[in-house]
Image 1 (cartoon, rainbow, N blue to C red):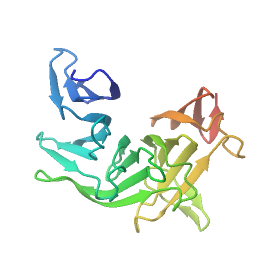
Image 2: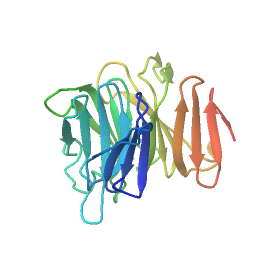
Image 3: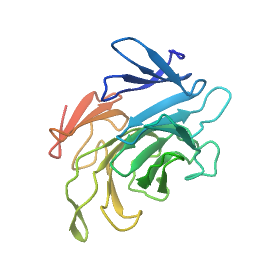
Image 4: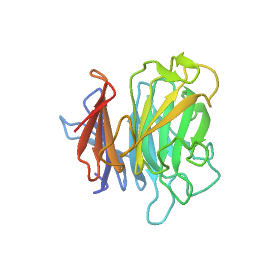
Length: 248
């Protein structure tokens, strides 16, 4: 490995391990120990993989700001999403987490003043000759007060089911769970219509309903087989959310 600080780990379907470090990323064949290094010299802070591509989020190093996202397709071609799709601010391109759904991507950004928050790339179209195209939308608390916070630590995609809105029951795409320093969020995007359609909900300590043991959410893991969300906290231990109930 080129770097000693490990930011993220992902196991591929072929059994190889992807590692994001403070000096690039590596794909390790766990049987032969053969290692292929990619994006040498960059802080690879987040990795996400689907059937179409591998996504690598970058963070700020000692001498540079984050460079947005690199996408590597099945042919090994690498294309950069430089962050201009969601921000004109140089310092709002430091990626903390990535999550991929079938046709959407979700990007968590490191907070910087009033910035940070989450970015959604909707209706992704992949190409063999360029970076994937999408419709991009940024979410910040100042524009979406139902969000729990702008300090996004982890994003995971849940299992689709209907959710209640004021106008009745509507079908959504897979709900997106968001860990922040100030609570747990759930974003429920709609199956159709416009990018802005969807519902933000916050779950916090001391709030009636689904009450958390701590608002400082450090990590999330989702088990689709049992529809269980595992929630790691700072000060409140480990909690799970299943069938709308929290269990420590």
